[in-house]
Each structure stands twice: as C-alpha cells, then as structure tokens.
Length: 325
Image (cartoon, rainbow, N blue to C red):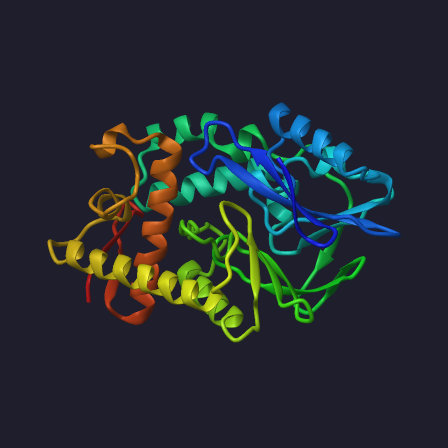
C-alpha cells in the first residue's frame, strides 16, 4: 500500500472501488517543518481508512502537513476536507473553484449542455445517481490557496514549480522539480491509459486543443521520472506524449470517417467510435462511461470544427449537429 519511490517521497495506493482505474496514486513527501500530500482519493470510507492507515504508518502529523490537489475530480480531491486541518494549506487552481462551491448549479448547466449535443435525458438521470462528482465529492471544503503558472510548492528537499495543463480538466496543474528532473503529472499524462478529455459547458469549446497545447508545454522539460495519478510511473515522457498525440489524431480521423455518412449529433457519432471497454454493445455500457465517452467525442468534434474539417450547425430546436466541411 505504501512504497518509497524517492528519498522521503512515498506513493499510497488509494482504492477506487467500482472504478476501472482501480486505485489513485497519492504521493506523500515526509519533511520538516511541513510534509506534503499530493491528491487524496474519493470521499468514501474505503479511501479514508486507507489514507489514515498509510499516514499513520509514515508517522505523518496532519497538523504539520499541506495538501496539493492536481484537479477537481473526486478521486483526487474528495478527502481533502477530511485530511486538512486549520493549520494546512490546500493548494488548488482558480478555474475549478466554482465547481467546488456550487456543485448543484454546475450539474444543472452541464446537463442542459449535454442534451443540446444529443446525450439522452433518461441517461442523465442515471448518471446523476452514479457519477463520482455527486456521490463522492469533497465535503467540508477547506480554505484554498490558489496556485497559478510558475508558483512554487516546497516540501523538504523538493521544490516544485506549478505548470498549468488544462485539457483533462479546465484547471489541471502539474508539478515539476527541475533539479530532481521530477514531474508529478496527475491525470495529464498516464503511462498505459489515456486521459479522458472532457468538453465542459464553461469551456471555450476547445478542450482537446488545450490538452494538446498542454502536452507541448511538458515536452521540452528534462524529466527522468513522471508520477501520474493512476497506474505506473513513466521514465520516457516524450515518447508517451508522442503516443498520446497520435492516439488523438486517430480518434479525429475516425470521426471524419463517421461524419462521411452524413449529418449527426455528437452522441450519434460517439456510439460509432471505437472504445476500449469490456462491452459488446453500446447499450450495455454504464451511463457514467457513456457520458465520459460522449464528452470526449464532443471534444474531438469541436476541435475538428476549429480546424475547419467539420461543420457545426444549430437546429431550430436548439440541438447541435455536425457534418463534414
């Protein structure tokens, strides 16, 4: 459960029950005068007990510990309200503070937005009940210390610079220690799975473009080791970035082939795309996984529209459809 990866830097596997991701990588730097926790796990009992046990094993005093959250998703921020004390700094980004403080309004706007692009309303009601953002979100929100590009986060012998890497989420932050050639990549760069690129109602309709630009920001950095939010660590980050960019090129090409059949909404296009899920038919997929696929499919369609390869049209009832340019 607890493994030392570098001097005074530990990884905790926090379980994510019912999730194909299986666990979150929470990183802990044990230091004086203050330790640092990077990402926490969901706000559910299994995660809390694992974190309590691991932090006890490491002899971490939460009154002398700060918390850095890479992004808004519940598996990364959910336990921050339990772990933070009145002495803790909780580092976070500005772009996602509205979602934390107004989850009901955010969900309503997101649902209205999804329906316009073809997501079935009956699936949305199922999604509300199962989505981690509603079931396991952060409670008892602590005071947040807002971080931006270039800000420093220090713990013991580690000195990290914040890098804004929107795409997987609007405010995603990575941490980079140039002297140690170390990147904490959150969900921006994962080794053997791809990050979900999700269009949001409050985006500039270019989540994929932002993600690709964020990959380009990381590419020139001298990195010997990257610590992601899930699965295994990486040692060849540039190779992985090239693989990720090729993956999204293939996704976009697949969508163009689908659009060659005629005008369709984003949900219709998504149901015809190739997804790495253990289901034979689209109807067998859980509502939450359908939404993740739909949101990523829409992000690619909007990217293709900005490139001039696809065309977006608003119908008389307000719905949005796509066709080839």
